[in-house]
Length: 185
Image (cartoon, rainbow, N blue to C red):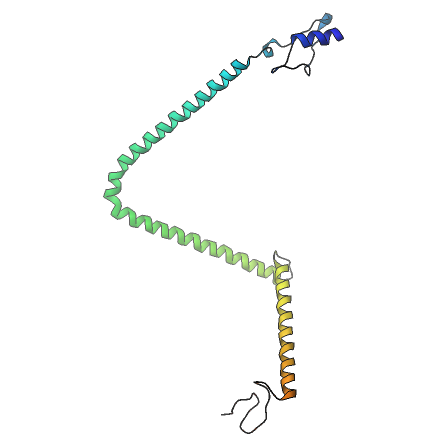
């Protein structure tokens, strides 16, 4: 068995040097058989194949780019007189087409937004749980808390002003003054 490993290591080195790691093919009678096509690939040949492939692909793309440029120049040369002749018709037509397209797309977008909002409101009103309803509930609770807080402060300030008899807009009694501290008319 050691003979086979030593013989294999000397005869079949993988690409790039180093030894081992390959499969051993043992045929009948202990003779070794290995695929001869994968043996001894030179790094120079490999680099030459890569360079030839790159030159072929790059050259093809360069030729295609040149043909596209030539076609564009020819089309522009032919189309320029037509554009100059028909520009009094084409420019207003293009502007009108742009405005119509923009109007239809905008109205469609607003329609989709309206349907989406109405669907969300329907789900929320019927007890569903649409996305974002938690944020709405939190905002409603915060507003309710602030409203109750302001109401309490106003009642407290009004109560304090009523007890001390000072302050603006408090209940005052006197000739010609009504409930809100202004003259009756």
